Image 1: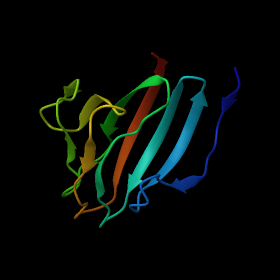
Image 2: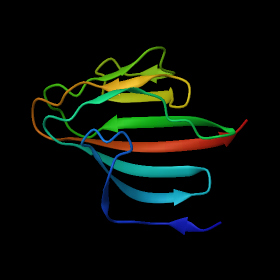
Image 3: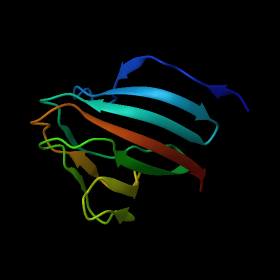
Image 4: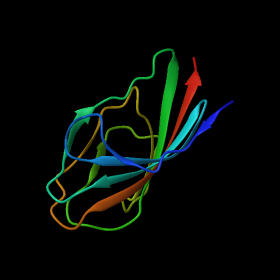
Length: 114
């Protein structure tokens, strides 16, 4: 199984102003640092992976004003809101507008065959 490693920031899929830095990708698992600059917000969306269940585990690496993760019925969300585990393909999720400094999030994804 080839492992890919990229050390370049690329724009996120929603075109909402966030960036992602891929730390590694190996078959059914990926790992990113996500960067949400001041003024960024991510609207409600899902992240389908055809034929697979897509789980994400996110950890906010720093605190900022705004940048609240919104997800109904997360599998797990810490009281502080800094850690979340959810089905990215099934559960609509969003991020409120970043009003303070840039938010960094460590994100691990698993895509498991149905």
